[in-house]
Structure formats: C-alpha cells, structure tokens
Image (cartoon, rainbow over all chains, first blue to last red; front, side, top):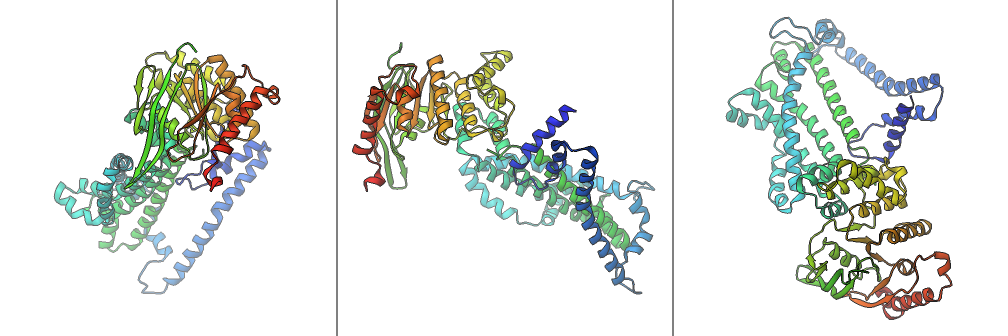
Length: 307
Length: 267
C-alpha cells in the first residue's frame, strides 16, 4: 500500500512539469490526485466516476444526436445511403462479433483489422528505426542536412498511393509493396522531427558528453535519444496516423484480406452497410493507435525538458 | 603546492572569424597555476573569461598558444579537467544518482568494480550533502541543490583540475553563501586544483589563493594577479573587518571600476 502511494506521488510530481509535445492527455495526473490527498475511498470513487462521466457523456450525446439526424435524413424511400437502423439490421454479424470465421473470405472485421495492423507494424517499425537513425544523422551533421533535407522536403509531399505502382514494379508482389508504401509514408515526419530534436539538444549536454569523452554510440543512447525523445515521439505519432491512412488506401488496390480491401470488395458488391461498419472500425483503431503511441511517449519522455 | 607549474597557460590567443570579420577575444594570456591552488578569474561581462575556461577545458580550440597540464599539451576535452557549468547542466531524464553515475561509470569503467563505483558515487553525493535526494530528478530539486549535484559530478571524475564556470551565478545570495562554504570545505578536504570564473568580487577573494583580473575585450588579457594573503580556514563573518581582506577587495574593485570600467559604463 505504502509502495503504491509512493509511486503515485512520484508520477504526480513529475506529471505537471514534464510538458512534452507528445503529451496530450492530463488523465494520469487527475487519476492520482485523490490518492495523494488521502480522502475516503467512497469520495475517491465518486470523483473518479464524475471525471469519467465528464469525459464520456458529451461525445455520447453528440453521437446519438448525429445518428438521429442521419436516420431522419435518409429514411425516405429511395435514399442513396442506408440509415443507421438499416446498417444495424444488415451488418449485425459484423458489428457484434469481430472475430467470426465462416470461410476464407467471410471473416470478422477484427481479423481483417489485425491483418492490416500487421502490415502497419512491419512498415511503421522499419520507418521508426530508419527514420530515427537518418534523422539523427541529419540533425548531427550540417553536410548531411544540406544534402538530404531538400530532397526529403520534396519526397515527403508525394502522396502515399503515388508510390504504389513503382513499388509493385520493384517488388513484383503486393505484400511487400503495401509494407513499402507504409514505410515511405511514415518515415518523413519521423526523420524531420528527429532531426529537429537532435539539432535542439542544448550545447550543455554536448559539452558534458565531450568532457566525459562519450563515444558516438554512448552519445546516441545516453544523450541524443533521451534529449530528442519528445520530438521523436511527435514524429512517431504523426507517422502512425499516416500509416493507418495509407494502409487502407493501399489495400484497396493490392487486395488480400485487410480492412481496406474489405471496403473495396463491399463497394463492388454494393454492401453499403458493411462499408459503414468498416469505417467505424478504421476510425476507432486509428484513434487507439494514436493514443497508444502518445501514451508510450508520455511514459518514455517523463522528465525530459523539465530542467 | 608540491608540484609547481601544474597547469601552464602559454600565450593563449583566441580569435573568432565570421566571414571576413575577425574578432580577437583573448590575446597573449600566460600564467602558471600550481597544484592544489584555488584561482579565480574575474572580469566584466564579455571579456572572454568563459572562453578562457572553455579553452582550458578543451571545449574551445585556441588560435595561438596552448594549455599544458603536467608537461603535456591538452587540446581536447577530457574528464581530468572536469567542468561545473553555470546552469548545472544535469541531464533531466536521469536522477541525481544516475547523473553522477553517468560520469563515474564512464571515467572508472575498467578501474573500479561495480560496488566500488557505487560507493564512490554515494561518497561524492555525501560530500555535497545531496545523498538524501539521490533518487530525485533535477526538476524536483532547487537550483542550489542542482548545482551541488553538478559539483559532485565534477568531483566524482577525480579530475586533476576542477573548472567552475560562474558556478553560483544563477543562485540567490543566501544559497550562494552556503555553496561557497561547501566549496571551501571540499577544497580544504581534498586539496584539488580549482579554477573558477566569477564576476563577484567577494566570492573571488573569499575562496581564492589568487585572483586573476582580466582587462576588457576585445583582445582581453590578464591585467593583474592578486595574491590573497588570508589564512585558511576563512570564516565569512570574521573577514568583514579583516584588514587584508578589505585591502584585497579594494584592489580588485579599483582594478575593475577605476582602471578597467565596463565598456558600457565607459562609453
């Protein structure tokens, strides 16, 4: 018990001072304050419930209102889009059970999302590792920046799908092509943010490194990565968002069993309710991906920039 | 004072070039610092005293001349010339202990066992009275405490020379006095060689064996070197009416404000 209080104490103190670009939510601090003040359990529970209610009720009300408007707008006969009730009636199996398997192409959307996520994991993972390394190089070396930065600034404006034909030609297979599209989409913000972070490392930290005679590997891990972490995580967060945007589009063209291809398939067989359910899945997963990267960033960068 | 001419500055000159314009910051700085000596370098802002310290540290290359430590020229940074920076420069993502450990683990990598290094880190934190805050991060401790940790990190490298760059400049007067007392105590106990940059006359005289007074830039150089003939240990309160102290103080003030006024005041 005493241990947990000690721990929450620490995080509460570190919380408000470590303002980082990657940090967006103030929930962790709010969650530990009641413990610190030592209020009775019932009151703590009530306060927590209130906090949850404040966060959940407004969007829920708006959602219900939107659904009602949608229902009214498209309920006349011959409407071009299905109403929420039609979606519920016709795509109930997709909504209720994300993980059913009725055949090779008749599977729950959860499986399809997982397939897409796997591609994103490969592409984004590659982009994260190489993006941080290239970004560190550009941030560290003036000549690398002069040489590479203008080229990157041009390349990063190329839309993800414009890379697809050339990667199909290069890899002669759709699976690595889709991963390459993710990679090339996600890498630019990671490179650019890492480079900015590395360039902004205070001279003092560099002086310490040179007095201690840290070699470049030690400098990278001990000084550069932690000092630039807030920037790196900003880049990773933008990158994961772009990856998720790109995978859906790429899968529409490359096929397979991802969520993107599902939408394309549903469009071809005029299953509009299925498309709407898939959109909801994509939105929620994208939201969760963003929150996960942000949360990891908050944990990792705790304390940085608070000097 | 066993080893004379421990650290030698030989005709150090430094110019910065930006395009066609060249600014000469330091010219012809020569002096000898003995082992165990506490030397302060004092001068008006912008006279190049921090540049001089960075040259001794090896962080800034010289244009002419050189720095010789124990008969060997030094021209790159190294842990045998540890620096205590003005704004503490602790790494904010590491705890107090880890900040010192980063230095100790690097400097004593092959020379001390893991347990010895741990004891050495704690010993140095104890020396600056910061062991109680070993698991705190820099953001959680006060400015004076951060500077104490900075000093502990410098001392823990077991440097031949400890370079202090306006170590108390950013602190309030009371905290500053406390830290000056701590530094004096440490200097008495360990007898290490220290070179300190300051613009505080009292601080310079209180702590130093010799006070180096710099002329104003451009092309600043050593104007005068004052021997502070005060017995150690020195006590702040007793010095107020001490004749040698007031004379030394008057000499430095005379140099700084009568003969070498700050450029802005002179203009």
